[in-house]
Image (cartoon, rainbow, N blue to C red; front, side, top):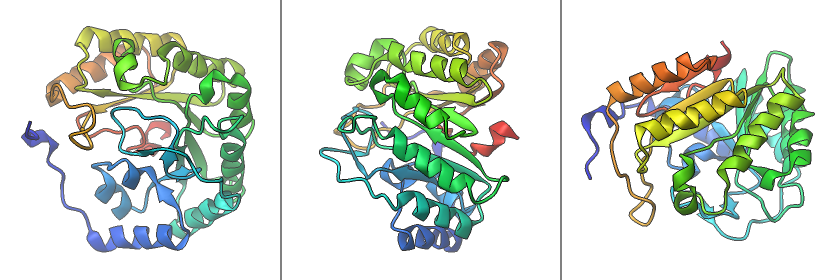
Amino acid sequence: MEYPGWLKIKASDQLRVMETQNVLRESTLDTVCERALCPNLGECFSQKTATFLIMGNICTRNCRFCAVSFGTPAKIDNEEPFKIAGAVKNLGLRYVVITSVTRDDLSDGGADHFARCIRAVSALSRDVSVEVLVPDFSGNISSLNTVLAASPTVLNHNLETISRLYSYVRPDADYSKSLRLLEASKCNCPEILTKSGIMLGLGETEDEVIELMRDLSDVGCDFVTIGQYLAPSKKHHQVKTYIEPERFEYLGQEATQLGFKHVASGPLVRSSYRARDAIE
């Protein structure tokens, strides 16, 4: 299935892209932008923004939509929080997004490492905001609270798709468990903004998408992002439908009516894309 015209990506300033890549290489840091083959990499890197991928680049889960490798992860790099803080300083970032592979092999799912990364970045300046895109921590609310105690600006956890598709697309995850995580975050630390993202084109119906957004609204989720799923390879779950921009606009309007504080809806929208816009 060929990409439709509205998914064409504009060329980026390659010199600025390389400058960002060099900072990341010198710090030996990973980004989800590269590992997940994000279509917005050129635009973001040319603006000296990136989403840091912590705790390695091997995931303990094998979701059928994701380009990140599945297997046995390596030991955590205890210097990583300081490396991220250094890269943030070198890039001059004021809004930092940190995510991770899922680490079911760790008793806390990597929550303490998330907290250390948040604190290391926050120590740079009061003007730096940190958004964390966390896994479900296997439903462990104690792990969630460890992350919240480090006071991120935004706690992001993606539902990714509708509940009906979980058993195939996200076989190791649980829709209700993810909703409870977002609900617990808002209940335990209401001052921390919550966010979630979904992909379209996996085989869902529009009514199911609206039901998902209603579920997010019911647990107090503040921000939602809606984008087009693009299969990383022929081995991954294949795109069922390319959603037209007009339908993204319609769903964005529906989300706004449900009360979300900020909505980003469009074919190339990703969970961390222009993330700073939401709090501004």
